[in-house]
Image (cartoon, rainbow, N blue to C red):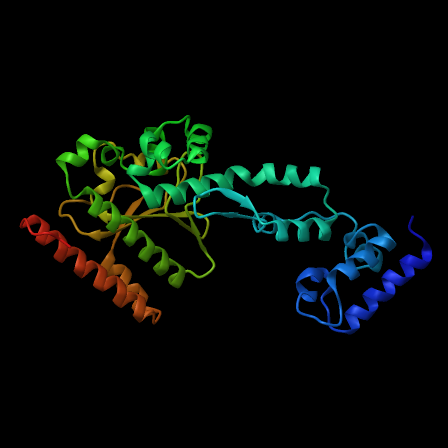
Length: 321
């Protein structure tokens, strides 16, 4: 039972901590490296006086009574493991529950509100790292990745084709028959992901704090969204968006009239479509130099040069490696 004396002790303790320069809104973190105060002991004193750290801070006047954690705080309580599972960071979640006086039941509700996004991010990371083999059921069973199978069933009805169509991966490459007829497709796939990473670095340099990656809108997942309304996809070749089975433009135009395709290799005869602008890798390099991002500009220039050299070797029947 909480008494007035215990509450006064708790408030006096908060006074003492603040005078010592402790940010009492982050007690666990602040006291982890301090010898003069023990987090467990402080927590016990505050709970004895008010039932929880959160209520003690409210009584002290630091917080309003009604407050909820934001999405970023909740997301920090979870992480994607090396085998692409969404796991809880118990240290972070306990810290958050104590800070906001969240019950285990309420925390489960918060988790349900963000778990879909987290699982899709985990699945996306898995697909990018293992495509195309990683989408084959034999591969998933052999690697004992039941959680990946669950993600596929939950978000794409278990259909690799549906995932490829919605997330912009080539279903043709997924097919063994296509890969047998096109032995270099994995090379192009790897280089495509590499170029996408370079484009992301460039955009963050050109538009700091304005770039969202892999934002899912409806059934679309553009590589990047800049400023909330400019959609950008990175493609290895300029004509990729017009390849058979690729519906990037048709799908994206339902949501934006400002679509930019940044490409590594130019193809003659491909012109801008309404609402679609093509930007070459060389143009991107030029923009980077304008803002003094010379190291990154040189990195992209080297990638483009090496890419053309490797493709020319393959066309001549020489091993690109």
